[in-house]
Image 1: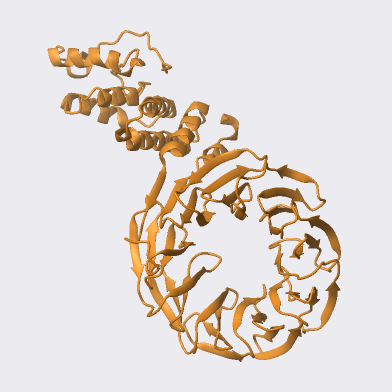
Image 2: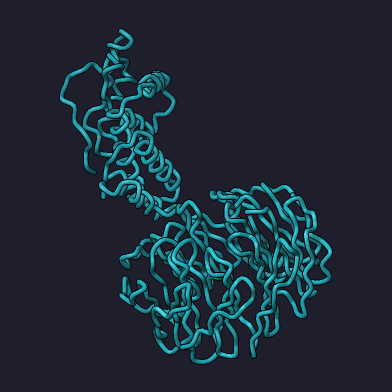
Length: 525
């Protein structure tokens, strides 16, 4: 093990601080300090603590590893040194803790796992606090976290149909919400500590939604209701539907919320639960979305139609009709223009008055999905079973991305850059809007279930089989998290620090993603 520092100045170890002769016990401790873990050369306590640059953590860690943790004299020394706030001292502390972590990582014993994590986190926090930079500390932090910081829970006792995990959602910024078939929502923090349980529905919960700021959390249920929570407390309950509530959207400009039900009605309510409007349809309301300015509501039913509504006037503007089933309806970002995708092989742009703007050609069969790029540019894509078509906001075709392996392609936009992630079967590519390949990964050993970006757009999460793998934008694998059964879903949390996955083995795993350490310290790599 590499030694951090060797101090050649001769200083009496304990005598200057207390003026007492060194006892046999103290002499034995000093000798054992020199021997402990093989990397301590000298452990000095200097007389003038205001000018000292001692390696406090080396003393402490070797003291702990030597099993001598009951000596009050040493504890007094440590507490006095710890009170000194000096960047040079803190860098020594971080280096010492990093070396201590490396020793623990070399020991396969599980009993050292938490000690390794604790020392790694403490060392890294010291760097963060004082804006210090040390490549070895950052690297050791990443190694410790990737190796040991994966937490697993089984929130339900059995795997039967009643209690199996349905889905896991990000919620309230620093929590996850686990929905099972027990009619409840179980909240956990990022250390897998149970927080609270919501048990206000009388039947199975079908899905859940958060607003864009993750302040509000809404649950949709087979008991014909939706409930909106804030920090675990009911804000209001939307009742009155006569069948399952299956769709919901938040509108933050005017503090509205919309719900859609299989009873062929959509409700619009204010955030205090007051009813604003009731919208009747001729089919089940499977999806709904507010426009970016909140003036329009777009609903889709299990028919050949989408419906465009004026929110302020509380009136139907028009029905957006096709000759086949409408699979998808969405607004182009920052506009009132809508796009519909249909089994009739057509994708159509409609303006805010329900007038047809353009029929998007270049499709080959059923147009089964589409997505708008948010925040910038107004780009969107539509997909049939052979290709992804990329369009600008005017409906001009920019590029066609053929399927990678003759299987129906899927895609999603980068949240930050003009680029798109495309996958089909077991193959995945990341391309810019000019069809230049940014990365093309080797085929995975199983079909890709899903692919997504981290919130900052710097990483890609791919889920396939019983594995979830994170890559950087150069195609370098950063983390692989595995379950004992097929992974049903997963996500990278909003703060970009945790990977959350859940699987058919009824387990949820949270892994701290150590790559954020390198983002903090690009010059330390």
